[in-house]
Image 1 (spheres, rainbow, N blue to C red):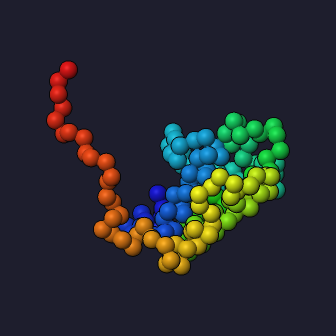
Image 2: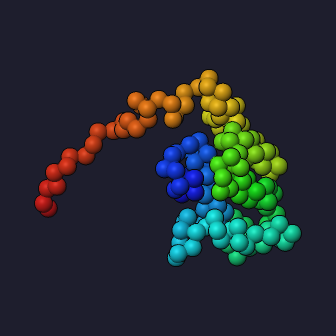
Length: 157
């Protein structure tokens, strides 16, 4: 949970960035945000040593990502994730900046980030400049549920 939200009970765009950073750390570690009383953000921050191989995260990283291969961009991915989970929202990047970084990481890894993607950093930039619909600005549609609700009656078997 975004530390600023915890203190203010106000969701912001930077709250979303924090949550996305947690998801990035989940992908790296293969762990839930909190598991056995340990918080993935804290665990990664405590183990991190940029001077060591795999940023000293070998014990935390999900082995299915291929730790015995060359992981192009892993260091940059970790850096982006940790920027996203900064305690203060003002220290976090915008979502557009995060998308730019991920596109750069994909290019570094030899992949084309725009090949099959419907959204790019440009679409996030449009939202931040107000030229696209923003999820926090239209409260009427913000929480509409498109499906019908299930019947509240529970029938015995």
